[in-house]
Amino acid sequence: MAFDYSKYLRNDKMPHIWCPGCGNGIAMKSLIRAIDALGYKKEETVIISGIGCSGRISGYLDFNTLHTTHGRPLTFATGIKLANPKLNVIVVSGDGDCAAIGGNHFIHACRRNIDITLIIFNNYIYGMTGGQHSPTTPSGSYSTTTPHRNIDPQFDLSKLAIGAGATFVARETTYNIFALDKVVIEAFKHKGFSVVEVMVGCPIYYGRKNGFKSAFSLLDWQRKNAIRMERAQSMKPEELEGKFTTGILHRREVPEYTQLYYTLTESFEKSVDKVSMERE
Ligand SMILES: Cc1ncc(C[n+]2csc(CCOP(=O)(O)OP(=O)(O)O)c2C)c(N)n1
Ligand code: SF4
Image (cartoon, rainbow, N blue to C red; front, side, top):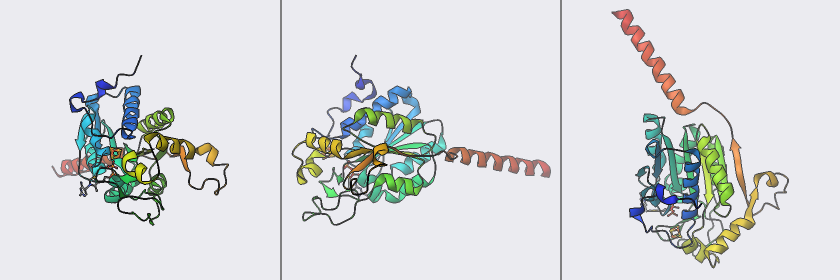
C-alpha cells in the first residue's frame, strides 16, 4: 500500500511553493517516513526551520512547528529542548541559513551535545532570494552574485560539523532515498546533536546557471559523485577529487547537554535547600 503522507501534512497549505523538480520535497518525504518509522507522536515532536525555500517546511508539516528568523532555528530549538527535554526536536535549515547568517549558531550547537537533529538542505545556493552564492557554492560555479565564476572555497558542512564537535554526522543525497531514510532514522535515534547534510537539487537557480538542463541531471550528478564512506577509505585523494562521501561519517557517544544541565541544576537546588535548612 502506498505511504500516506497526507496525515503528516497541513493539506490546507497546499499547493506548496517549491518549484517542479526541487529536491526539497524528496528530503521532506524522507523526514516524514523516518518520523513514521519511529512512531513519533505529533504532540511530542517539534519542527523548527529558518528562512529560505527550505524554511517553508515548517508550514507544510503538521506537527508543533516554528518558522523562525533567518539563521536562528538552532537557537529556538535549543531553548525548546532545554525547557522540555522529552520533546523530539528537529531543525531544518538551508545552506545559507545554516552556514552563512547562522554559521556561528551552527558551530556552537555542534559544540554542545544537545539532543536535537539538524537536517541541512544543501542546494549550494540561496534559492529563495534569487540564486546568490552561499558558503557551499562550489568554487568555479556560477550564481547570480558570481556571474564570472565563484572564487570562494566551498565549505564542507559535514567536516565543519565534525570539527565543531557534533557527535553524529551523516551525508546523503536525494538520489538515494533508501540510504537517506536510514541515516535520518539513525540521526533521530542518536542521543545528542546529530547533523544530516542532505544534498538537494535546486534546478531553477543552481542547476540552470551551471549546465544542469533538468532536475533529473542534478540527481544524476549526485548518483555519479556520491562515494560511500566505506569505499572512499580505499580510494586515493586524486580519485576523490570533486566527489563527496556519503553515509554515517562520524558517530561518538558523550553525555547529552540537557541531562548535564538538569543534573547540575538539581544538585545546585539540593545544596541551596541544605543551606537554608541548616540556617533554620
Ligand atoms: C536577516 C535576514 N537577512 C536576509 C534575508 C533574506 N533571505 C531570505 S532567504 C535567504 C537565503 C536562503 O538561502 P538558503 O538558506 O540556502 O535556503 P534556500 O532558499 O536555498 O532553501 C536570504 C538571504 C532575511 N530573510 N533575513
Ligand atoms: S528556487 Fe530552487 S530551492 Fe527554491 S523552490 Fe525553486 S528549485 Fe527549490
